[in-house]
Structures are given as structure tokens and as C-alpha cells.
Image (cartoon, rainbow, N blue to C red):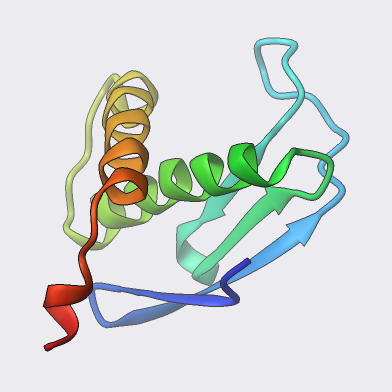
Length: 99
């Protein structure tokens, strides 16, 4: 997994951790973004594709924070955008951006 990712000029560290605690809804925590510390944690217990999908989800949280977007229903919007963004990034070749 990637170890760092730059969002809005800020380098976020990405760490795989044992996130065995539960979120507020009784679900196992898959990832978390600590925007003020510029850290993203991803559960090491997840299969690699789910880790990657979770990373994109947490990345969307970081993007919203760094761009100053505050939403009342952020988690719902991040879930929707994160799932589609993961699919787009996975299924398409973006190597032309490196040229």
C-alpha cells in the first residue's frame, strides 16, 4: 500500500493498523482519516481490494477537509463518491497525466 499521499499540498501518511474497535454504528472500523494530523489509517484485516477502496474513501474525507468543504451529511456523500472514484481509478489508465 502507498505510504504517503499529497492532498492540497499536505503530505498525508498512510498506515495499515489493527482497527479492531467499532464505529458509532456497531460496524468494524475499516479506516479513519485524521485530517489535523494528516494521517490515514486503514485496517490491516481487510482484503487488499477493500483496503484500496477504503483508502479512496478516506482520501475523499481529506480532500473535503483540505478544500474547506463542510457538509452535514459528509459520510453519506463520501461513501457515494468514494465508491465511484475507486472504480474509475481502478478501471482506467491515467498514465497520460504523468506525461
